[in-house]
Figure (cartoon, rainbow over the protein chains, first blue to last red):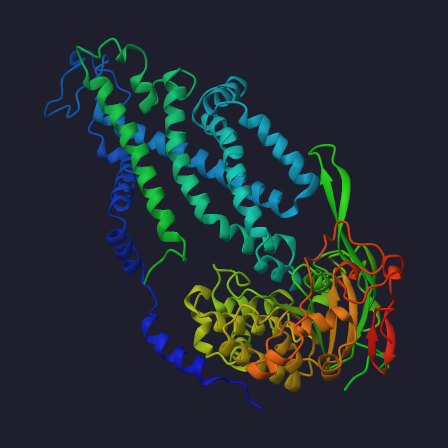
Amino acid sequence: MTAITPGSVTSAASADTAWRRRTLAGTVLGFCRRHPLGAIGFVIILIICLAGGLADWLAPFDPEENDFSTMMQAPDWIHVLGTDQFGRDIFSRLVFGARTAMIVGFGAAVGGGVIGLILGVTSAYFGGWFDLVFQRVLDVLMAFPLIILALAVVSVFGTGVFNVIIAITIPLVPRCGRVVRASALAVREVPYVDAARALGFGHTRIVFHHMIPNVLAPFLILLSAFVGQAILAEASLSYLGLGVQEPVPAWGLMLQGSAEDYATTAPWIAIFPGLAIVITVLAFSLFGDALRDAIDPKLRTR
Amino acid sequence: MTVSTADRPLLEVRGLAMHFPISEGIVLSRKVGEVKAVDGIDFAIGRGETLGLVGESGCGKTTTGRCILRLERPTAGQILFDGQDVSGLSSRELVGLRRRMQVIFQDPYSSLNPRMKVGDIVAEPIKVHGVERNPARRRTRVDELLSMCGLDPKFADRYPHEMSGGQRQRVGIARALALEPEFIVCDEAVSALDVSIQAQVVNLLEDLRERLGLTYLFIAHDLSVVRHLCQRVAVMYLGRIVEMAASDELFDHPLHPYTQALLSAVPIPDPRVEAGRAFRPPRGEVPSPINPPTGCVFHPRCPVAVEACKQTRPKLRELRPGHWVACDEVH
C-alpha cells in the first residue's frame, strides 16, 4: 500500500518556481524598498561607523590640539563646523567622537545584550529556583536607574573608555534579561522545544539552537535601542565628568563645561555635538524597528 | 491481533500517576492541592500494535503520552519499555531511550522550529545522536526520510512557514522517524488537519507502521479515526482508564456507561438511523481533577450509578476475553 499523495508532489513543483534562493543584494534591496526609514537609519549608522573608523583620514585637524589663535571661530571653509573655546576643530572632534561613541555604544549594548540574552533564556528554560533567584537579582539591579547604576560602577572602577563600557554594560544586562526571559517563557511551552527534548538533545543545544533563535526578534530591537541608550549614557557620564576624560574627544564631553556659557555667543560649540547624539540615537531606533519587521519570517512577505 | 498478554509487550504501564502540584506564594511556596491529571492507569502495547487512547479534553490522555516519553517525571507507577523501567531515569540515562521512542505532535505549526529549514530539522537528530556523521550521506538520508513521508526532497531547503499544515505534519513525522524508533506516541497527530489531509496522514501512518514495524500509542478524540487505525482502544475519563478492548469490540459492544455515552455522541451520517437511536451524550460537565468525585469518578454523570458507586473505586475487570471494564454495575 502506498500512501504517497499526489497532492504534495505537485505542490512541490509549483512552489519550486515561486521559491528562489535570495541573494544578499536582493535581500538588501528588498529591505530598502519595504522599510525606507529603516534604510535611512542604517545609512546614517553606516556613515557614523565609517566616520569613526576612518577618523584619522577624515579629520582635517588634530582633535586634541589647542590653537589659541582660532578660538571660538564660527563655521567657515577652514573649520567647517567652527572651533571651540580652546581653538580645537569641532568637525575633527565630532569625527573622533563618533569613534568613541561607537566603541562604547556597541561594546556596552552587545556585551550587556548578549549576557542578558543567555541568562534570560537559560533562566526561563530551567525555571524553578534558578529562575526565582535570578529574577530577584535582576530586580535589585533594575531598582537603579541606568545612569545611577552606571555612576556607581564608574565610582568603583574609575573613568576611562573601557570602564565606561563596563559601567553601561552592567545596567543593560537586567533590562535585556527581563524582556528576553518573558519571550523565552513563551517559547519554552511551544511543542518544538518538547520535540527537541524528546529527541534527546542536550540543554545547551536546546537553549542555543531552539530557544535563542526564536527570541532574536525582540532581542535585536532591544539591542538597537540599547546602542542608542548606551551612546546617550556615555554622553551623560562624560557630560558629568565621570565618563571619557579630556582630551579624548567624546560628544558628551563637547557639551560639557563652558559649552553652556557660550551657547548664545558661540552656539555651534553645543549644537553640533548635540545634533550628532540626536541623529545617531534616532538612526538606531529607526533601524531597529525596521529590522524587527524584516527579521521575523512570519512577517516576511514574498 | 496482539493481545495485551503477549510474551513481552513493547510498552507496559503500571499504576502510572501524574499529579501536578498547585502552589501558592512566591518565595515560600506551599502546596495547596494537586491536579490528578493521570491517576493510576495500567495498559500494555504489544510490538507492532496500535493502541488508541481516547477521551474528552482534559482527561489526561496527553499527560499519559508525555509521561511515557518522559517529558514529565511521573508521580508514581512504572513505565516498562522493552522490560526496562524508564519512569525514574535521569535525562542523561534517557538519551538511549530517545532513539527508540518518538513523538508526533498535534499542532503542525508550533511543533517545528520556525528558524530552521526543513532539511535541518530532519537532519538534526541524526547529527546529534551521531547516526551519520558524513554531511553528504546525512543529506541523502534526509531526502529518503522526506520521500518516505510523501514529501518532495526539494522541501529540505524550505522553512516550515512556507508549507501547508499537512506538509508540515509530514515533516514532523519524518523528524520522528529520523532515529528509526520502534515506538511512536501520536499525540492528536491528525486532529489539527483538514479531513482530506487527515485521511492522507492516517494512511501514511498506517503505511509506515507496516513498512517499518512501528508501534503506536495513538492519542485522539476523533473516534472514527481511532477505529480505523487502532487494533485496541482504551477510553480514559478523569485520569483513569474506564474501558479497554479490541477496536471493533469496543465500538460495537461498549460496556462502560461512559463509553456508551461517548459513542452515542458520534453522529451517524444517516438521518433515519440518527433519528431512531437513543441519544444519550454524557450529562453535565467533567468534574475537576483537583477534587475528583469519590469512588467511581464517573458516578455524578452516570445513568446507572447506585449508592455503592460513591464509595468504592471500581477496578478494571476482564469481563469478556480482552475486554476490560472499570464498572461494578455491568456484568
